Length: 504
Image 1: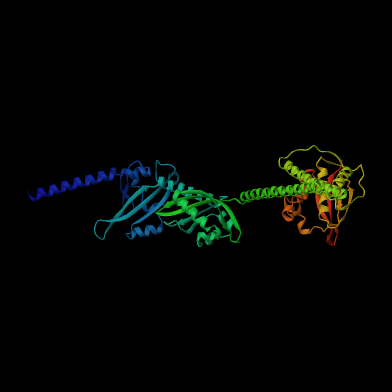
Image 2: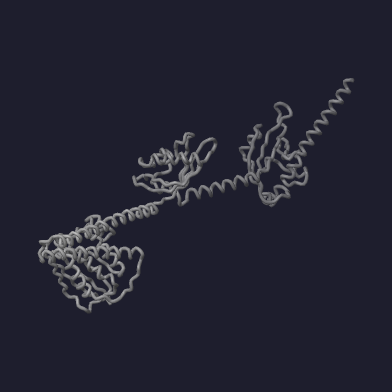
């Protein structure tokens, strides 16, 4: 083959190669465009025409890349110096058309990623610029939605009513560090976020609960989640009970525990109060049983003495029988108190009616004389008449008896003097005053003395339930009860119980 024929073949192959490249160039889904060194576009494939909404190449050739309003002056200088650039921008095609920048069939806004690089014909002679344009609208929208979602999640995280925090954990199940805490966590504990991030997580756990915390972590590592309760120590040193919902997370080969914590102080206090109430009821039943046994033993002893002692005199026999009756009456009083407590527990309703104060005090006086046969009881009812009546029920007599029994029992003298008076108010209420000369009640004990079981805890006997019964019934009658000193300057000189009641 001659030299001319070889040249023809090479030219033909070159034309085919160029034709193939142009075909790829024109059919490529990626938008390509070429501009001369002045910036005017001279070539562009179908993808770039579609991307810009241009009808044909002639419309593209009217555009100059240096006139792109999104191209910064700094990037223009770099291009003219032969440096490649890239930038992203949002193009409002409606606005571009209105301002006459170019005719386009596209509407609304689109985001483009643009890459421009100078190209050379000879080694040092710049011939123009090659551009690649990528429509990144969908990606940008997805990124914006993701960012918006992240912002919402962050907002929810920071403003959640519950405490939320994340702790990094080692492969061995050891707590490494806090990596994130929300504002509620800081608010509850008093620690700032920065303090948390620099704090060993176990510093929040009380020493007596460290073992329990370690066991909890092991379960989370095994199961992947756990709901549990634990206490933490706040910055001011107080203990805060929390319910934790914990989940194990794996991110980039690291392990984390995501914890949502809820403050449960009220729940814990309610549970503790219920547990204490159960213990108190158990103690109460033990004491009541003990007192019943004592009264029964005493009564049986007195009866046995009368039956078995052949030398007993009539006077001694009478005395033993009186003591037996006293023990039985005390048992009856204790049983009555127990009945009232049971009625209170099951909320048995009694019908309110008109109750004579004078009759109630007279009934109580008779029982007192039988209860305390070794004492002389002087009950002075000063200004109460048969006309003085209040709104109460059949349990009111027990209220009066318990108050008077309390006054007699804690007066160490053999002669007990109690003064009773009434003050009628203009609002159809009255104040009963029961004044004794006993050892008095310290001011610091006056609030708690009416509390449930407070007296029998102190004195160790069921008869001490009396004042709790009194307070229970006063509340039932929508009244009030309080304590004053008989001597304003010395509480040990005696006590005045005052009760506000509703008159008929």
